[in-house]
Image 1 (tube, rainbow, N blue to C red):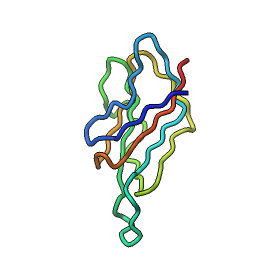
Image 2 (tube, one colour):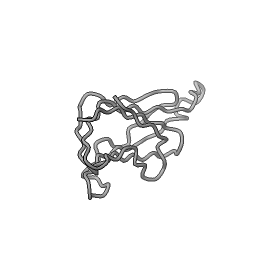
Image 3 (cartoon, one colour):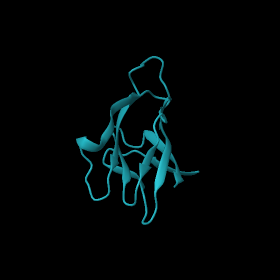
Image 4 (cartoon, helix red, strand yellow):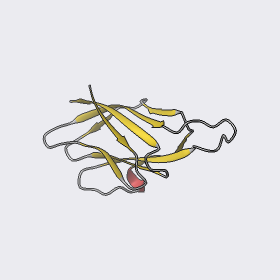
Length: 112
């Protein structure tokens, strides 16, 4: 299994782009809010993100959005692993966060 890591920016972040002549099975996506929790201000540190699976040659849009404004509290991790996704050559995973460099993402995948 291979992995890709990135911070999710406030602009479109291409986390993974499938290279020519490859197919990837996405097995897991982990999104971690790296801020430290603050028990006095529970709402502090809550950060949302969007996730898109974008087909080769297409643009990120609402039609390929699979996760919309998911909140991740400070110190917590969101796991997306209930469905397996196959990406073809040129397909990509694009993410967007409301707070840049607060959310880190790890994508686990296998070449198929």
